Length: 263
View 1 (cartoon, rainbow, N blue to C red):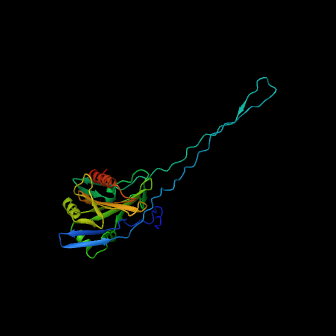
View 2 (spheres, rainbow, N blue to C red):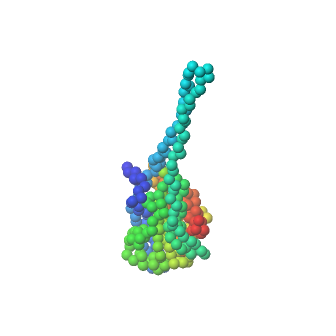
View 3 (cartoon, rainbow, N blue to C red):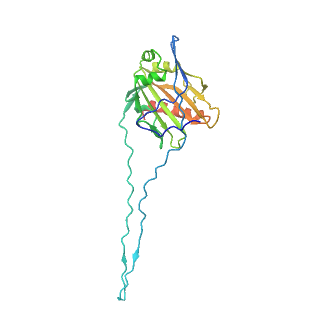
């Protein structure tokens, strides 16, 4: 029996969710294989936090009767409802620019935006990946950073979020390379083992993979790999039951467009 994952915790960013073998071929000379720990995803809807209710307006009119032929009623003041204060979502200070496929600024700026109502695991802006984080994607194989360096690797960024309905978890990972040609070549040799290949609609150069669970009560996953300009992007999706590849294709499309325009 799987144990539900804990609620998002900004203090403890989670590991990348893929539980697959990854092979990166480098000019036919070297293959790097990696496996990462499986993550069982909780699909329950996040606990709702009801807003504090404003005091209901009440009105009481008390008539004061006197010997006067024309009694004058005395009205009790009616309390005015006070609006519940709201805390605006803090604006991100992360900035970036793109020109002719060349991305500058903070790489986190180019992470696919979290949809309305979604919850981030860790910092809302995502996090910059250390060399150790990136190496872990490929099983910390000896020489992996040198291999990435041969493609002009510069930096990495990632963010994991859960959709508003709590049914889907998405991890977006960006790797910044020296040029468009280098990022394209990197994608060409980047494949995922032990999963079934699927097409990514609208992107013939992308690699897509799906893992179907043995039972619909279990977690299924999809992975999409492609590049836009000098940035390679990977999108991992985990969902209860058999994943719909249309979901992955849509996420890949939106990430590609975000990298193209910079928002």
